[in-house]
Length: 169
Image 1: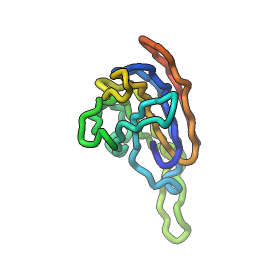
Image 2: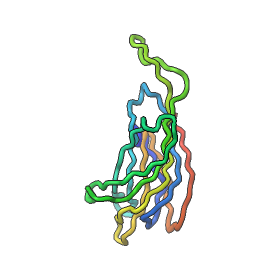
Image 3: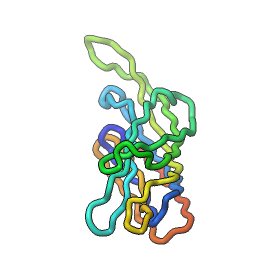
């Protein structure tokens, strides 16, 4: 999640370890978008009833300025799983500054350049079992500005790889 745009990875069926390999690219104007943290949420898909949020975590994007880096994040649970280790999230992050200089205000001349955030959601491991069959149907939510996209649910998959590119301007 970044600002208010909302992207979701594909859903995995009955997995405690899931490989997504989905890429999300957010182009944004630093004058209009003050957000500098990306919010990742881990959810369990439920065919009947509401989906269950398992965890969320924020990534400070300034640490990845003009350098691509793969990181792993230990998820801490939310709701009924609060305080428990509920899995590990793997992501590749690149935060770039590019484009033409922009002026923020006529009275205060401050140069800003357009920016881009690339996120490759690699996968999750050791996800807490959220379903009655001691498994989960995990997917990741990434948000930015006011757009939402949801990938299709994958059923009974043993191994899945899907590359999904998004460009928001």
